[in-house]
Length: 389
Image (spheres, rainbow, N blue to C red):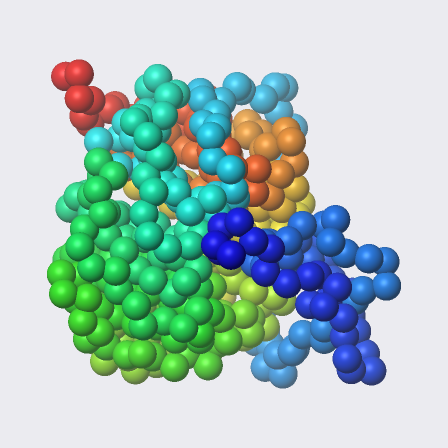
C-alpha cells in the first residue's frame, strides 16, 4: 500500500510500555509522537502509556529566567490569506525569493505553489515520486528546492514544479530536515536513521558522512550562515554543532533541554543559535554552547524563525500558540496571531523582504500574515520584486 494512503502502526502497539514504569507526558508531546507515525488522538485507549524517556544526567545550570508575558492586546488582526487544498499535514514550506510565492510540502505527498497577493493556488499540485514530505529547503540562489521524504529520498525541484533528474537515496529512514550550504554547493540532510549526510548539490555524491550523530532521530538541522558549521537536534534531547567540512563534533552534545528540539535557526552572524523545545525558545552561544536566554510560552513550541529584516523571532507550536519576540530586549512583540482553531502549528517562516509571515500545521493549511498587521511598531518593509513590475 502506498505510504500516503496507509496508517503505519496502531497507537496501541506503539504506546504500550513493556517495562515496570511509565511517565506522564504533555498532550503536545503525545500528539507529536502520534503525528510522527501518521496517527491521531483517536487511536489511543485509556490504558495506554508512553514509554519511559531517557533523562539527561548532565543538566547545566540554567540562567535565571526573565518573567516575561505577552501583554494584553485589544484585538487580533485578520490574516491576509489562508491557503487550503492539501489533504495532509504541512510540516514544511518555503517563501520564494520573489517575495510573492510560497511552496508547501505535505503528508499528502504533493507540493503546491501559492500566490501571496491573490491567495490562489498556482497551477496544479506537484506530484513526484516518493512518499510523504517532511522537509523543504530553498537554494541560496532561489532556483532549486530540496525535498526530503519519508522513504529516505532526497529530490531537487525547480520553482515551477519540475523535478530534476536523480532521486538520491542513502538514508534508511525518514529525511526529517534539509539545509543548503550558503554557497549552494552542498545539501545536508538529517534522518531518523540517526545520521547526517552532506552531499554535492549537483551530483548527489556524499562528500561528508554519514555522520553518526548519537542523537537518535535527527529532528532538525541547519547550516550556519558562515557555512563552516551545521547544528543538529535529536530525539535524545540534545543539540550538537558539527564541522561541515570534516563531520567533527565541535560543540555538545548540549543536554538538559527537557524534550526534543523541534527547530533550530542561526543568527545572521553565526554567533547564536535559536531553538524550540518544550515551552521555551532558547538562545545559545554557538561557540561555547552556553544558554544565554529562554522565553517561555503558554504551550510546547515546534518551530522558530528569524526575520531577515528585523530583530524578531517568531515562535509557533501546540494548540496554535504563536508569538513574536524582540531578539535584543527578549520582550514579546505585537498583537496575538495564534491559530483560532488551536491546531498544531509545525512550521513558521518570514518572506525574504520581511513583509510576510506564514505558518502551517496539522490541518493542512497555511495562514499568511502581514507583519505590519501583527507588529505595527516595526519599520515597514517595502516589496523588493513583483512579477507585474
